[in-house]
Length: 70
Image (cartoon, rainbow, N blue to C red; front, side):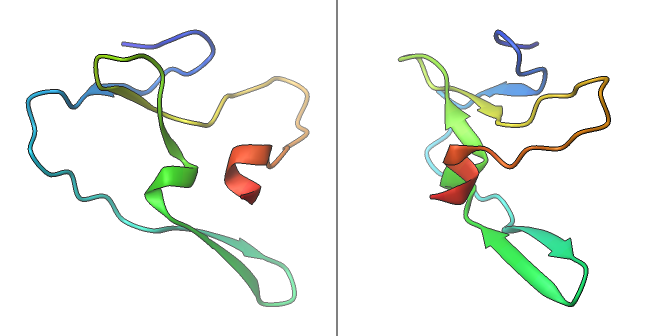
């Protein structure tokens, strides 16, 4: 299920450890930006629900948000 504008969420409360891959944005000119899981899998409540911090839009414009840029 989803949470607010995030549509891909997971209940991680029953897991002792969670391993997720590093996410990499590949830009023109061979520039890469690697994101650790804490910059794209964010807690959305106090009961261990985590969501991918990406939201779709219909404008065709992409924005890299402040959580990803940290």
